[in-house]
Amino acid sequence: MRRSINVDENGLEVLGLGFYWDDVEPGYRFRTLGRTITEADITLFIGTVGMVEEMFTNLDYVASQSIIGSRPAPGSLVFCMAEGLLMQSTMQRTGMAFMEADVKVHRPTNAGDTIHVECEVVEARATSKPERGLVRTSNQVVNQRGEVVLTYNPLRMVKTRP
Image 1 (tube, rainbow, N blue to C red):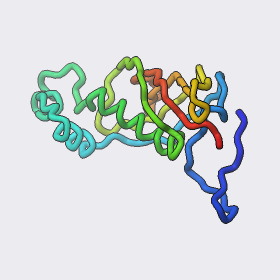
Image 2 (image 1 turned 60 degrees about the horizontal axis):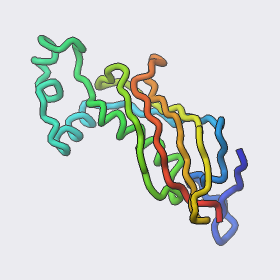
Image 3 (image 1 turned 135 degrees about the vertical axis):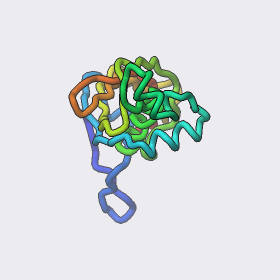
């Protein structure tokens, strides 16, 4: 991977900025920090999006009827949290558009589980416009037990290094 240090107009290194498409190449791998999914995260998410199925809102039902046995996080919440972890570390000021992805949920994620994302760049190429390129990654969302709970392969439009 080719990487230049990002500096501001005063010559100070700026931390937390995303990568440019021409900074990475296929085969480059990285991982995010972790985040624990809390009861509050699940409650706020299901309330915000209207996903008020009993599996997510009724703990008595979950305890007596669900095969999971504990409060599950919706797969869409796990995906959104994974994207949040990636935005913090890879797309600040460089990401332009999320274009597509195939998403697969492999196993439940429950309140109290901690996830992180492991990524591998599988495509990085220029577009017809010189100021942007496309980057596709293969992403695995992994829990604290090392189990892959969700996979997806986003294609993003990303700025070219100035």
